[in-house]
Image (tube, rainbow, N blue to C red):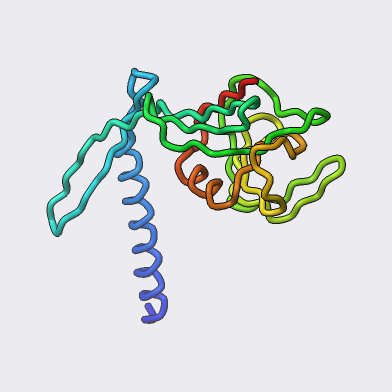
Length: 177
């Protein structure tokens, strides 16, 4: 058998074995979810030379964002601890911000937002919580504390970045009058 065929077979068998090992590791490292809906388990594996240590850390899912339309203020909570309190701009009277209890369903570092009467490129730190409504940074105005938007919740860009990095998909958003 020519050497180039033999070397090709050896390379492809190595790739096959690597793929097989990865599939087996994935299969055997899966763990079922915990039964407590407010807590979830995160497995962290640390490899130190030849020793593998597995630790289970409880991560609280009690983070929430509260938006007070009358105060034009957003508060981010971790349990009973206030993490952030920011002045915001929400929807104008003709284009109100929806009231209710929602969850962040998607996050975009940069996003183009279009609607009736607006088309804004490069909107930073957008976190959608209900249909086309999002919490996001606003670089086009500096009038926070006054309703200015078409229903979204506007923040200064630096504050939107902090909130974006703090919140995750699934974080509860409560909007009150």
